[in-house]
Length: 76
Image (cartoon, rainbow, N blue to C red; front, top):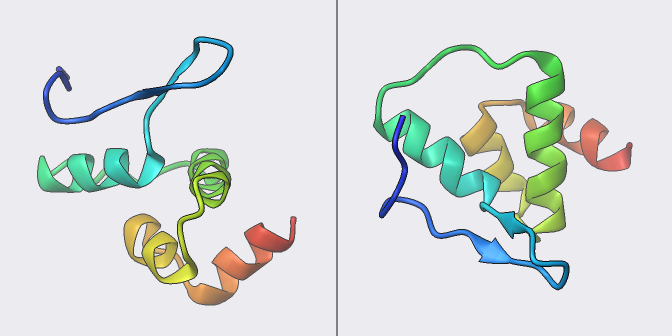
């Protein structure tokens, strides 16, 4: 799947490129990719979203988790 022009990565201080996980989830949804994510994939995306300062509501909507599940991940 080619993503050029649809996602804008940002480079960190170490020169590593990162995509906003919320943008990735939105793009996949837009393209109709609705493969269920494995628990580890979901947790990893949630943690990346937390690091980017994404709020509870957007994490719930993007990852289609319950608020309780997102709060539990956040506590971890």
